[in-house]
Each structure stands twice: as structure tokens, then as C-alpha cells.
Image 1 (tube, rainbow, N blue to C red):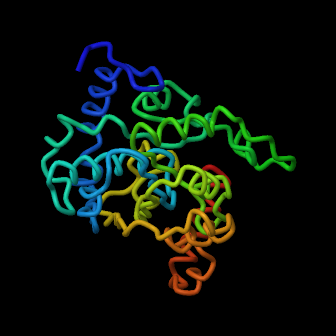
Image 2 (image 1 turned 120 degrees about the vertical axis):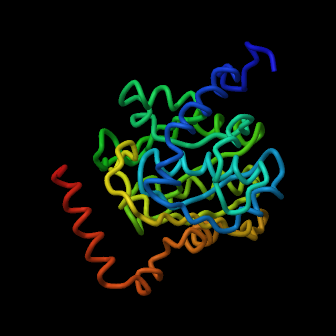
Image 3 (image 1 turned 90 degrees about the horizontal axis):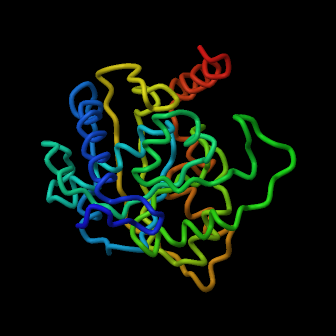
Amino acid sequence: MGLLKRNPFGHILFIKKWLIRIFGCLTHKRYRGFNELKIEGSEIIKNLPDTNVLFISNHQTYFADVVAMFHVFNASLSGRTDSIKNVGYLWQPKMNMYYVAAKETMHSGLLPRIMAYVGAISVERTWRAKGVDVTEKRDVNPNDTENIKLALADGWVITFPQGTTKSFKPVRKGTAYIIKEHRPIVVPIVIDGFRRSFDKKGLRLKKKGILQSFIIKEPLEIDYENDTIDEIVEKVEYAIEQHPSFLKVIPAEELEEQEKLNALRKWDL
């Protein structure tokens, strides 16, 4: 790899590789040490093609979810089965891996800007601005969809189709349009425990001894020609276990805990 070789977004791969190594080493104990990450389905990662793969997941923190995925994916590609033991898997990380993130989040400070270099595809949210919902939705920026297209053509893309860390919010149709137009292999991931382990941004360790779960599911079966946008949205909701029907199977005490957490976030406590 030449020292100045770049990816399609102009990022120097040598710098990106060292950022992944450094951040990976600094965060490893957050998933294997202070807390424990229980992984299922890592064998699916090893069998995926090198490009045009879209990972869809529920969302619990701004950054800790994505960092965990970089750990799990690279560990799986290095031959580890459902484990991130021995951080040596980060020495030769997968370089063509990207994640979709809100532009306002990635521009919110020096650390997010540095993390954006690792692989963020910054998009402008049409329904939300400066932390609050907007009554009049803005038009989709065509550069955003073009950048996702570029990233899929180059490698793997991680997206959180609800566009928020709040549970059981609707899946945004933009993800369904991306799936229908670019026809990627769609791999669902369901995570849990991150909300209890970290603060909302996923930068500060809030509590130790939490069992975090990370379940990788088989790729979705999608009829790209005949499935409607609404049908794809519903498949995504079921796959990441955020369809309203899942509310019925959540224990009452967990729902009560979630309501308390939402109330605390509202007052920034």
C-alpha cells in the first residue's frame, strides 16, 4: 500500500489504518474487560463478498455501536469465531468499511471529526436538525445518496435505518430506497446492552460489568424487482427487531427502565 493511496472519498489509507489500530486498542477493553460482548453469527461475516454489503442495525449510542462492529467484523475476518479475543486482528483491518452518520454529529467536536476519517458517510437528516425534530422535512441531498452508492461499490456500509438511538422508532424509507436501487446483500444485526454500558454518545463508559449482545443474522431475502418500499421497510423492522410487534414480548421492567432512561436524557442528567 502506497503511503498516499486514497479511497474514493479522498482519505489516505495509511492514516485510516493507523486510526483504526489506535482507536481499536483504546476501546477493546470496553467490550472485553470492563464489559463482555457476547457475539453470535460471526461465521456469516466470513462468507460475505468484499463489496456491496449493507449492514442494518438497531441503534443505542452514537459511536459505541459502530466501534463494536469494527471490532467484530475484523475479528471475524481474521478467523475468530464469535470472539474479539486478542486485539491483533486490527493490525491488518478491513479498509473498505464505512458507516452512515448524521453530519451534525460528525461535526460536533474534534474527536468525532477524527473518527469520521475512519469511514463516516456524513448525511444530512431531513427530519431532524440540532437535536430536535423539524416540522417541514428538507429535501434529500443528492450528494448523500451518491456517497452511499460509492461506498457500496467500494466495500461494506453500516447503517442504522431508524436514524435515532431511541427504540422502536420507525425505519426511514431512505434505507429501503437504497436497498431497492443498489441491490446490496443486506445483513441484519441486533445489539443490546450498549445503552446501559455507555452514555448517549458512546464515548464515556457509564457502567461496568454489563453483558452486551451482538447478533449477526442471515442476509435478508429481498425481491428487488417486486418488493415495494413499504414491504422492504417492514422486513427491515422485523430483521432488526424494531417492529412494533416486538413491544409485546419485552418484559414490563425493561420497558419501565427504558422510560426512565429516556426521561433522564430529556433533562440531560
